[in-house]
Structures are given as structure tokens and as C-alpha cells.
Image (cartoon, rainbow, N blue to C red):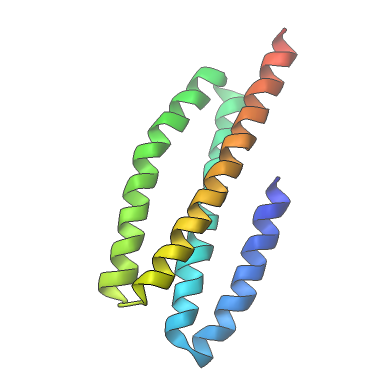
Length: 124
């Protein structure tokens, strides 16, 4: 599962970084709209894995509940930075940001479910 994050992050960086030199707005759109949510999601799965190993399923589940609030704040902040501060193309930026966030949100859900189910099977 983590290979998906590594490959997508590397691919996004390799596309976004050169675009910063040729079309700066498009480069920022790719990096902020795709790479930042990917990194945030990766950090979340690392925390989920750590909590599952050290604290158990109940704490892991509780962290998942708190993530909804955290991710909402994160998405609002990223939207504000991209649209108001950097004045990126709103349609493209929001589309990339939302699609990337949703895709990795679903991957996180499957990752968390797999971790919890593996732990339950080990116990039973």
C-alpha cells in the first residue's frame, strides 16, 4: 500500500517541479493540489500504523474519527492558500485537490480496515 504513496508522490514531484520553471501557476497547482494531500495522507497512515501497534484498535479508531475534523481544516486551509493567497486557477486546483484527497482518503480507509482486521484475527 505504501508503494502507491511513494510512486504517486515521486511521479507528482517529477511532473510538478519542472512545471514550476515553465508554467509556475500550473506547477504550484500540481504540487499543492496533488503532492501535499498525498504527503498528508501518508503521514496519517504512518500514525495509524503506529497507534495500532502501540495503543490498539480502539485508539486507532478514535484517531480515525478525529481525522475527519483535521482533514476538514486541512482542506479549507489548502483551498484558501491555493485560491486566495496564490491565486491559482480555482477550477483546476479544487478538482486536483479534491480528487487526490478523496482517492487517498479511500486508500487510508482500506489500509486502516486491514490493520484492524489483522489485529482482530491475531487476537482471536
